[in-house]
Image (tube, rainbow, N blue to C red; front, side, top):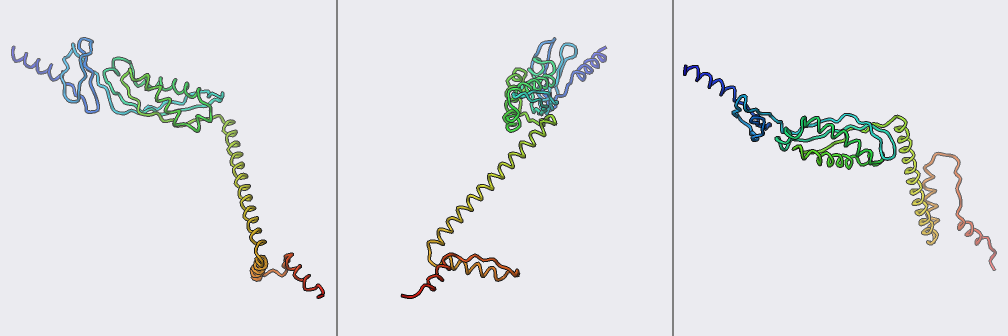
Length: 248
């Protein structure tokens, strides 16, 4: 009789052993009431009267599917993101919300639509990090009661309609042409300033223009062309006039 009783006790003890891994925490209930949080290791959970639920506390990456949204300037677009979060308080994650993963995903979807609706398309495209930070802050405010700690939110893709893509491409091309014209005009203005400065220096120094003329002739001597059109400086012609004037 005692032999069978010992066997029964041994079976109950073996059946009561539960293993909690290092990356998990156990939520222990006794008669339906929360008792305490179980740390990693082998633990005894009495059958029938006690139960334990394991919660994974590792960082999770949840991809939020594409969401249809309308920006502040009434432009339709699709946006998806990735949320990185972890369970900071396992007891709350089990007791306060039925399915924490699904709850975080649903909250992220609605938050993305709301935040994108408060931004214009230009703000959304140029300040993606700021938009992601606003989404993260809103989600973190709600999930703290669930024992969830939101690490970051990354916007993966912003999909626009084809006609809007063409419009943005034309706008970008016009902007590039505008910058090219401005750069070209600035270069021409600087070249004109340099030419004016050079002309001032040559005109203020006697013989400078003649030396420049000789230097130009030296450069032309290496050219193989047969015809050279050369403009004689006015100072040279005036020098010939002085030679032709009769002596008194």
